[in-house]
Image 1: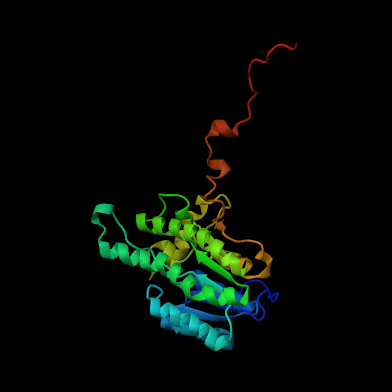
Image 2 (image 1 turned 180 degrees about the horizontal axis):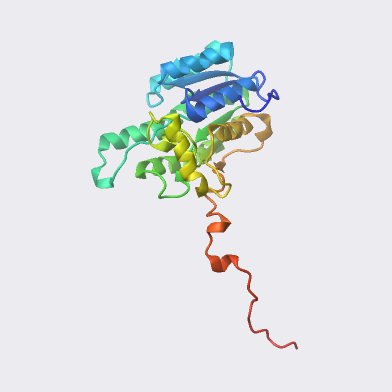
Length: 282
């Protein structure tokens, strides 16, 4: 479950979309450990049921297709009806989306990619914001990506959608602030999950090999783990971030900043005396 509980979310109620596995499951576990009651919204009933079974009465599952307005409205209503309130919405559900060249991308693939990655965020905020603003507190957290900050590390539409999630986070935060509700985005880097591997059915052994191959891509020397993102989600859900809104947080081991010092060109890393002409003193 991660670090020992400090009760940072005692009495709070959260919704985590895509909460059955990966980043979502790690966040659900962390939120429950910190005292929250959590609604797990996901399409994978088997994984979600197993997770909720481990966590006990502080967690519940509702099968939710986040691209469908009716499902998202029902998700928010279920959280309030079951637990009596809502404090945190973590719009985390996602997938890799359309692959391949632009000319070979169908409109259907375009539509489902943006429905899952972007419209779902809009729908979540649409139905959660009135509740949060009416009570005068709350936190909306959106999963974006370093692919929304830098091009070339994900498929075209995934990168575009995640950049739009960041923009949506910023503009929505201004309206939500009128009700003292915060809205921020997390931009994960390479996280050791099946999504990062590119295959939802990736095995633990395959993910371990990905860790080994990709550990050098980050200045901090390892790929991220779901718990790394859960830690940031906890900060944004808790009172420790009460004066933080409209921001995107890269949680990526330094990847989005640049290459490790050891990978810089050798002349940049070798100290040499600087030879230049100084004007004569006057």
